[in-house]
Image 1 (cartoon, helix red, strand yellow):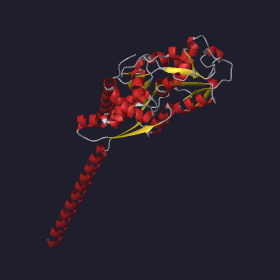
Image 2 (cartoon, one colour):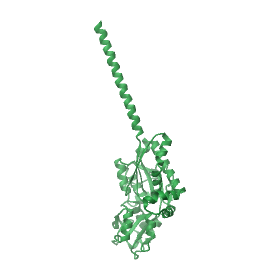
Image 3 (cartoon, one colour):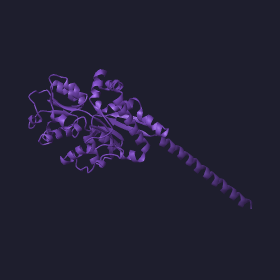
Image 4 (cartoon, rainbow, N blue to C red):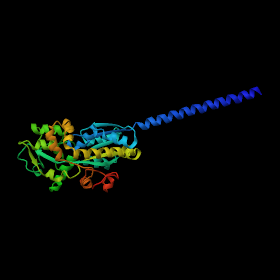
Length: 334
């Protein structure tokens, strides 16, 4: 009987010990999950120029972090990465090192067409573009076709490349007739190369457009600016579909923060200029002037028109069939 009772007691103690370990593990898992849930992070890529001014506002004032705190009462880590092209951002999104990016509409449409895994969550800005030359004998795009004159722009497939192609098409020329003339340079490097005479033409956006127009020995070919105006979408924000579907609170905070930054840029131009001038290397007074020449709006304009042009002219392999293919359902515009 003693042996029997002893066996029962040992069994009870072992069972109790097993439950205790299970509870400890469960408690540990809950704590681990809570810690994991708290580690929400956005890795955001952006590029150069005044087209990205609201992002400087958002970054310097922690607007996304504040929006997330208001929605959830929790913290979010936002890390900003400055990159030189939309192609680089597409690579980052595809690899998982980025989940948000801001780029020209051309690379954004191309990335959506390739099913990289994102859509557009906001428009950001429209800006004037210019094709400037240091050769006063060049009067039109037609003068360049068949020549060896080099045109500096930020990347093959960039929005500048697509705008150049559209300008050619609008003037009855083959949209790919100047592809071989393109040399890839960052906007600041293109400005320097144009001024030094090492390249003949530079296709760029603000503030470099305005800086080049102020130089007496540089001349503008107007077809590019006419093909895509500041009223048309230039820079858009893209977000990973995984972020949209799996972390709606972070996605909403992202939208709220960028909307607030756009509103601030429009209503506080001088304060914005004090922030952006430091990044652009301009005097604050000039920066105010340049900011007023841009358009900052969350609504897209002619986005689908550009996507159709890209599809019709071989810039994307898979056609975009509708505006809804390009954007998340919170986006307004066309």
